[in-house]
Image (cartoon, rainbow, N blue to C red):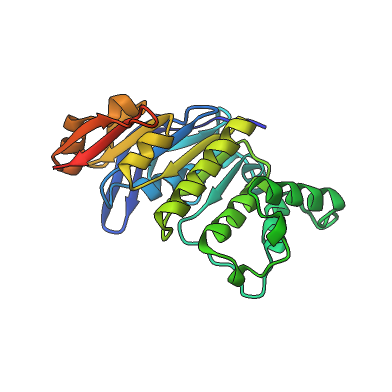
Length: 258
């Protein structure tokens, strides 16, 4: 399943003032788009707006070419899946129970979880490499495994678009790499459209097909990593002096701070 997601002339207000003004972007279909920018530049607000969790003060979000507000909540949830930055699951829940919740958009008063839902959840668990932990309590698995379980839940939602808000938060370097490799593998296998916020520019350059850089309530730069991650852009957007070299392992831009 695939879907298209974009915003047209969107403005967002949070707290006492605007965080985004007159922004228009299209997520690149079947690719990974990473959103970067300084703190308070509107990255998470943009994701929430794209998912219809935050209403724009101006402009509109389009899903499959139609205003996202024209879809029911269930229809939106069957087309895009959102993993927020701070996730909390009740104690006593097991991995397979969490992942099965991804099938909620397909339930109704006359349709509870079915054997097909159970199979889809089991397949999602296998995709993220947690089959051996399927019956484990969430509080007994590692941080990296827990993040894999959350990703399995949104995979079970069976959508064409995944929206991830800082999926590597609180993870060490090894687990950050593990999660981003998993996202890239799943995106390629399924042809998914992925948008995610990352703070680490080098990780963004390594895993993104397309980068959106936000600053001063708008879009400061957009394009493939080699056109966005430049010395001039890093200085202009983040106020940091750096050198940009080619990553010897991946050929992607890699910044070294001065």
